[in-house]
Image 1: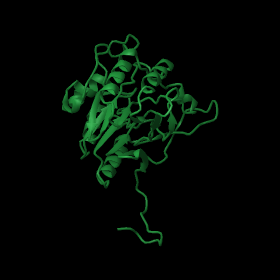
Image 2 (image 1 turned 180 degrees about the vertical axis):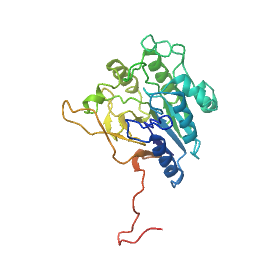
Image 3 (image 1 turned 60 degrees about the vertical axis):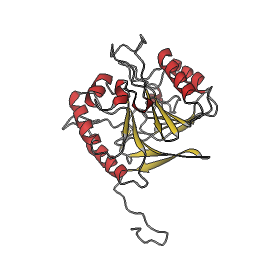
Image 4 (image 1 turned 120 degrees about the vertical axis):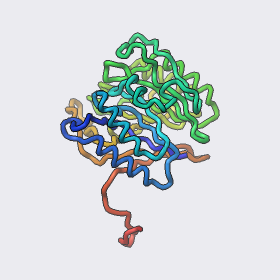
Amino acid sequence: MLLCQITDLHVSRPGALACERVDTARALRHAIATINRWSPRPDAVIATGDLVDTPHPSEYEVLRECLAELEIPLYLVVGNHDHRAALRATFPEHAYLHGGRQHEHQREHQSDTQDTGQAGDDFVQYRVDLGPVTVLALDTQSPPNAGGHLCEARLAWLDAQLQACAGRPTIIAMHHPPFDTGIEFMDGLGLSAQGREGFAAVVSRYRHIERVICGHLHRSIHAGVPGAPGVMASTCVSTAHQISLGLAPGAPGSITLEPPGFAMHLWQPGAGVRTHLAYVGPFDGPFTFDGALVS
């Protein structure tokens, strides 16, 4: 099973640039063209949040136009820049966003008083089985905060789903990573301490979790989940701009135009999940070790 992860698309309204500099829609189209040409073709693509930038209705229209070019099944996860109701309205055919039972997708109703920014909206959480592998999408959004949260209701949903898919290799997809990264200003916008502790308490009880894949950081980072020995989590580079690698205490928040990219999560029997970072060109190559261009 090959799962492609794209994240932090930050699609802007027509004519606007993210951070006054980045044409994120154009960058997403380039990434999609690269993924469509990939061999072997991924079984699915999952976008782990921050699909749009502000959010504004016109951004969701551009997002839909861009993603329509993707030739591979697509699953969407909400991030702190997203709006649950607008996402559902933009993609009505994505049954898993609406609580449909296709592919064993499931939802829960919002009941957490800490997440009142979109009153009446239920969490965007679902299960999808991709051959022998199960993917659980977890909603970490906590509007109007940029940081994330996991309440008791969401953690209970995760616990129940992990019990239900026991024995199946499982990937958990969420926007905010459940670990500190060392990039101080982004860690200040991370998953709440309560959310991280609760997440660790749940996942530490299971041995079939292959990986926790996240967005939010605009960088490729790998770490164990604190409090959950043996559970590995990772973040992914953005399809557009990256967060600067500022590891010094007090380093200012900034972006960099390092190469955009995506992740390829390869699962094989007996080997588990291996993650490969892929870049979006253009760049020269590939060449043989003798310098000849590979056709």
